[in-house]
Image 1 (cartoon, rainbow, N blue to C red):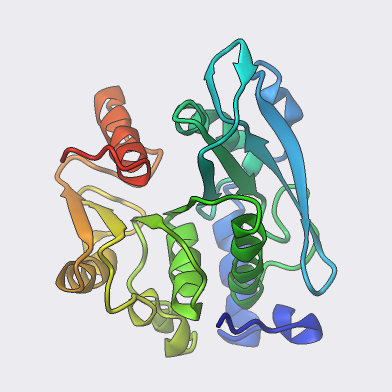
Image 2: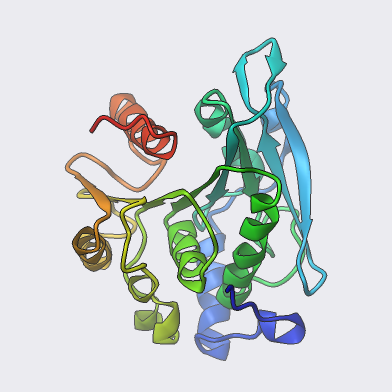
Length: 265
């Protein structure tokens, strides 16, 4: 059963009244402003909205499943992507075209307080939102896939720890802990890994300059002990920041292949 918090408690600060506000102000300052012109050249992207239980509207996009540019097809399932701190939906949805071409509908939402979504930037609220979004999408699709990037990987980890159903998940560059920032240990990603993590891929990068190996290795090693597939990329930087196009494509292929069940690594 998924444990969800409602209404006023959702946007409460749980990592220190001043510290949490300051961190999110600093972390989110690198995110670009919304610009719908970024998606004009894509044929199969549509706007989506999700209203949370505390009545905040989260805006995003779905990249519809397709094989080619000629038309959409019935999706095999969905892939929900939880973004990193400096990312917004209209910036990233086009980057996920390869996922949609594997015949999955790909969803990306702006976190509350980011992009065009309502609400305040609070870690508790973000976690609770995804604990609602996942069951909502599960009702519409038979196959349920999750891809979390950096902060998004930590948020997806917490959703998984709450008991949401999913078929496969990729957690790319998740921090091991939030408690080092003054947050409660119960939301540490390392404390939300399932005992059986065999349907999870954990990716870390040895040259990640944002979340350095010391910040991610504890999570990766525990995931490995619990049966997850792991990959510690010798030439991997932070997700979507790999400078070498070949490394970038290798990472994307690794994620797609795991989620679609065609992994051969």
